[in-house]
Length: 386
Image (cartoon, rainbow, N blue to C red; front, side, top):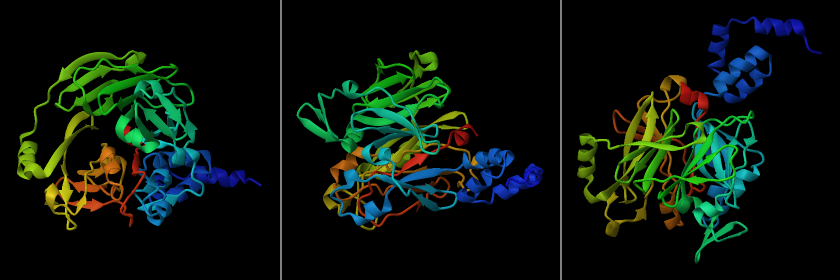
């Protein structure tokens, strides 16, 4: 029997005291507290929606296999960075095993199904939105079960993401009320950008000016596309009609240039666009082409093992996530094509880079040489808006 007097008493707990208590609770405790009453549910949802997660492949599959069947591995758990705790899934959803993740945007994951059909998925609300197929967009001539044929080449689902869809971003947050939003794909080795507006049955290929592109990002109803020549194209994506606005040629930071020159031919560089506190940042990542077992950069002819990876990063306020380290870059691997070149190693390049002392420490470690599918961030929309 429900005790209405008890319910009214917990409703009367001062919000500041309740907030202090909730701030000390684990994810599981918060979920249980949300079930007490409506006021606790609202406050608990505020805390849950500000948790930073890293979606991980199944640890049993990654560490238990011999590395020959990694393409069939699925995502099996969520790592809570605030608690340094992994929450494993009792049953792995079909989407986590039969599809590959091509993006994480606005708190949603974007997957690509085996029949070349992309879909946004909210992992916590269990909402899935089906979108039109991209088979014609990517030039697929024939689709077989689990494989795609393009000319004389046959690709599996993981290789499709590696070679043909570099990144997927949402222009807004989908909801159950058919709110307008769009999905943008950076595809065909960065040479094309395609746009889909919610409610449409087709994809629109943008008439871009500076392909190929290294990165794309959506910020305040604008699409920013960073070319390999470091030009930035700006597109207006409001109202379902994408219009080119102007180009930006940002100056290359002298400090970054000096840093790159100091590496000589031991490193290559990759560039990213990151929104931070209303500003748009150009982030430079230097990648060691080869290193030995001690982590020392070497030339190709001196290599012992190959490490060619680079991160996918976003920016959040440290105030919105109490356990987030200030002035740091949290990164994971997204150099898909290089991971496919090496069948025995890859996926380890994830950690926390401290901007002040140049130190790097791991986030989560596997004992296996090959980690696939690679870990993927889930950044709740509440953290992005803070």
